[in-house]
Image 1 (cartoon, rainbow, N blue to C red):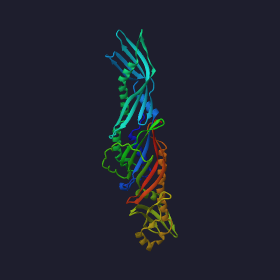
Image 2: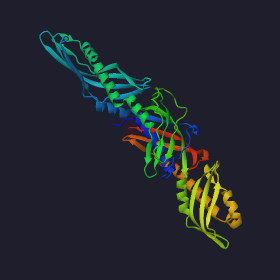
Image 3: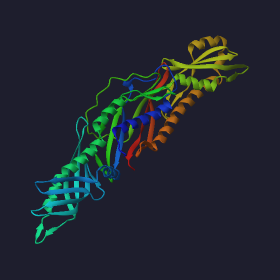
Image 4: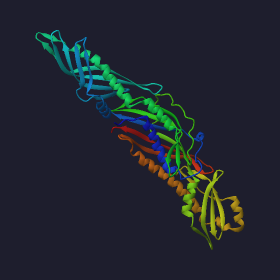
Length: 452
């Protein structure tokens, strides 16, 4: 059976965040690479959950028994049975579900000296109203709203005619509570909202291990969870679930969970906009940047007129608000040279670029006496190009991976997340000891379809 639970909301959050980690997580490191929560904007994810009418009908027909009610009243001299005649149909009206239940009924009525039996058919309409209280308990109330005859029996004994309507009214009065209770019980069994919400809220606050290869962890840091009023949309019900969070990505050992927050009280609220607006704190780890740059440049030789140097090693680290590239050379110059530069955000191209690397003052003072010729040539430019290519690959992979995921991600059998990605923006750029840190802002549309 296919149904949407709030655990699927957690899955959606993890799906979107996991794609980011796949592109931005970095490789193995010994220290955390993260940003302080106080500098982060709040993420909002709005997920329209679509419950298809045909799927709900199938669910009810598969789970309600064929015999809806049977009883025997000695005081009335009446035995009766009500059973499903045909498939139950469903319709929607705001926060109310309407059921049309075709029923075959059979009865045996005791008379003074004999007994008679009769049977007929009618269609009974039930109405289920949904209410969620402040503790996230889903309460339903199902009642009979009307009935109409499909086959009305008439029983005649000689010159006497036994009225059937009072008998049917009696059967309905006795059976309606049983049928309504069966519907309410079925709904509660299939969707224990409070338990699901408590489990989900606790799960969202735990560190999530995403990649052994990359040694990457995610803390979602949820701050709120709300559900919009139920709305009709053609042959389906639409509920907008939306969460607010301040997700953080960590590279290194498992980060500690914060103080566990209790599940917030239920609140009906309309989101200000559709789709998602993710603000993810992430970082380009210097250990990984060192590995990539070392792979591109180690062993390469550079000519400076009649002089040649070979790159033996490269190490990248943070130095104040700049990154420092320590380059070990051999050949016409044997020793280290340190280039420093500040990552800049190119608003027009929406890219992080490292340009205008300069020789660090401590290196420059030494080189002015022995190897001033190193200030010129391709070495500095090649280091810039390698770092910029690495950063650009990060952003390209992010967009591609997230677009592919949103084409259709199956959360569970019959429950599919689809969407589209809009703008990707970068902001809050700064350098720490072990990483280039920034905030990724993602916006787009999402939809969860059930039973399509």
